[in-house]
Image (cartoon, rainbow, N blue to C red; front, side, top):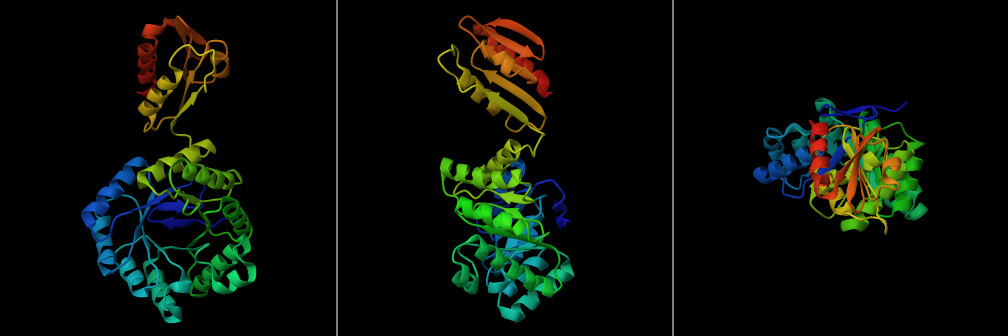
Length: 344
């Protein structure tokens, strides 16, 4: 049975898939850090992670948390002292690797603090942090990632920590998918999905969608982060798009649009882009169709709450079984008027 881990009031493992991102500014710069988190929050981020590189960052967590409403995860490596300071400053979760947190004494310090404050811990492995003995035996493989992650999990469990989230990320999509599938068969702890270091632009989005989407469609994954070398707000939007494409998020306006062909005689692509821009941040379960021609459009999109298909002299605007012809010059205005009525 899947365990449920609570991160500052957000449940991991309960069926809903929370979206995460990470700030790109110094945590100790409270004003700048808060500003970036508020942008992430407004974009739909459910949990935010911050880097803790020094004591200033750790102590800033309390000040940052005073201005945000989503849980905050402190990301720490090598320093048990900083981990303890971050927890005492109010971090809702730690991201650590027990193998690099200062040996047995350091692990004891951190786990004692975590138990006292009753917060969860995320541990895991990526292809740059596989424990040496697993890397030597299995190479850069799914087995090495999974065994390395579980080895770190067992260290925490032996110290009485039960609220654990696990990740096994790689920049290689097939390797990532294979590792998570293997891990899902071996643990009931919630899994944090991601394709790490996915890269830049469209290629990064496609890699993330292929990897994360494959796992979500398998029923694997309890939270996710899309890792982009870009504005982290784009990570949040991309994550929601992946969840929507996998049928795991319903409260949004789905825009379906024809790819167009030689039969298209109006600006279908431009209209689709304008519709998408209007509904991007609307939380309402609707389907809107922008179709290229009257030959196939109304039939292909008859399940839409509102649709339009174009012709040389007129467009057809349809809602269910009802359809009206509107002169092309007036069609976009009428279509948007009906859209606004639906969005109210």
